[in-house]
Length: 214
Image 1 (cartoon, rainbow, N blue to C red):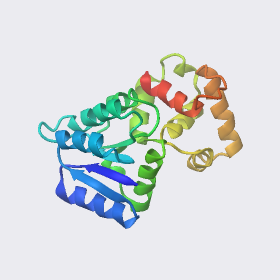
Image 2: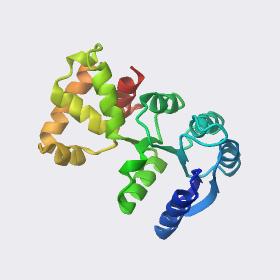
Image 3: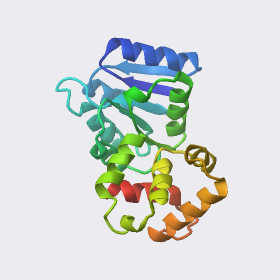
Image 4: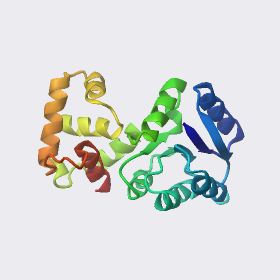
């Protein structure tokens, strides 16, 4: 992959760059502020961007803003946001630019190099990767909203894991249930969220987007 990396802390930026190179990927740009990030994304058009949400000059949401602006100019540009904070609004804002190739994970989750790179690769391939704490915040705050209030606790758990980008096998392993049970729960979720079969849309992604957009 050709990767653009945005992180204002030198040691973390250098560490992630070294990790990516160790797995055979090319870091085409490593920047530490929002304006440089936007220029790198629109000029280099990488396969994926790994972006710290809070960058100079104001350390608010420059990374997010640059990513959103870049995806507006380059539709579908894969972006994985990194943050120290749980803020569902960040995930929502990124998702408004498209449903594929997006991710939001907390920095504290990055404890395994291979898993982190696999997450970046999944986003680069058009998948999603939402941190469980972000999704849990959405579940807690909005579980009573219709039609989501009709979901059972187990169905909410399955939807939460869908948002993290897990496969049926991955969800089964995480929840200690069978893949057949996972498939049944997902079918129920599709029905309750009024997502009929479609040849042109990914219902798994639509279910996650519908939840996040609440």
